[in-house]
Amino acid sequence: MKSKIIVLIIFFCTLEANAQDPIFTQYYLVPETLNPAFTGIANTWSGGVIHRRQWPDGNRKIDTQYAFANTTIKDEIGAGITVLNHNEVFTDYNYFKLNAALSYRIDINYDWRLRFGVEAGYGQKDYNFGNLLLEDQINTNTGQINPNSADPGVGNYSNKINFVDFATGFEFDQENAWIGVAIKHLTRPDISFRENANVPLDLFLTVHGGYYVEFLNSPSNLIPEGSTLLLTANYMRQGQYNRLDIGTVMDFTMFSFGLIAATNPEGRSQNSHLVTSVNPVLSFKSGEFTFGYSYDWNLSKLGRTQGVHELTLVWQSSKRCDNCDNYKVKLKRNGEAGYQKM
Image 1: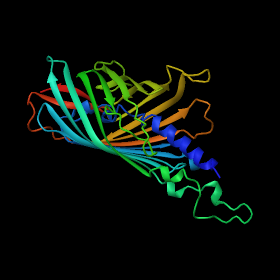
Image 2: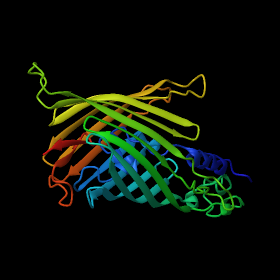
Image 3: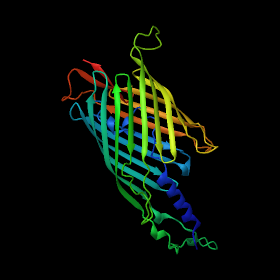
């Protein structure tokens, strides 16, 4: 008997094959999640982790972890690695990615720099079809479970997909501004769970930027000297999906807070929402470490999702690159680059 359950599972896997890559709210703290051109931008050793829990209510829970480490080999060259792991409880689906990244910097003039980045890695999508309980395995009279199924469709699906993937990007930055573009999945690897099928992974495009407003000589005691206001935006497109994050973050050196709105600028139906979530963000700095937290407050009609929680921990060594120019030290404010003249 043709199983309704296997049809449902295949439907979910098809959706996943064409769905968006994991997206992080605190991209401004860890720009490496967007663009390999940010690799080594701090001119020192840096690393960090992100843990994102989406829809924490029981079976709908989705967990995503991201980790990175990078440094500057020379003044112009950055190198690093990134690791991504994504797990969905409802389908037992898991996505793992390990990448190596390189970047190269060109000084356009005294103020502006251009950085190119490339990323290559190994990916694996995993779904254990052996754990499926199909309709013909259930004896409705006795409630017993037959370990074998007569459904011929089960043998046509693989539990794991292995693939090689590439990404590239570039970014311009100066002391108070940055803008970048990146494209992921350049080779469009086949991610179909079905044998002899071909489901290419959609290209992922991101255009991102930010501008810092400095309060250097503020007459108000409410704003400490050296505080900045970050205006930031990040547009993403993958297949039929698109998203634009816009927001602002107030940085008081030791801590920062702000608000980022996730929007759907190209609604695909009458039920589409322009603003899908409003996301408060908060971070604290202690020595070489920055701790961040964000909460995505859902505004769409998805129902009681209990929001999205995201935790970040970023470390940046206070020791600058020994092989880099002595007349400037590169800083990172909220994860992005600025320069301080020596």
